[in-house]
Image (cartoon, rainbow, N blue to C red):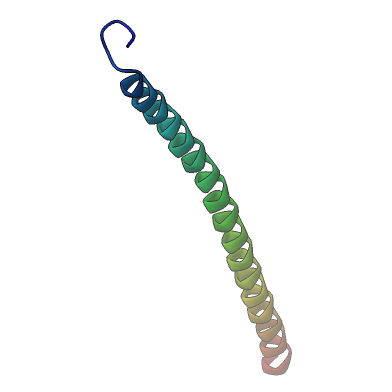
Length: 68
């Protein structure tokens, strides 16, 4: 006993702090992974928009040539 408290109580307190630290660490890692996924999806979305814009511009150019 330490200060009238059994040793296993101190062990439980230490394990609670370790568990909190590990949860915090995994939360940060998960945020990083989620941010990378969001950036990847955003890049894919922007490429799709760019392709659609270029297709539309090609269609407009073709339409202007034939209607003139």
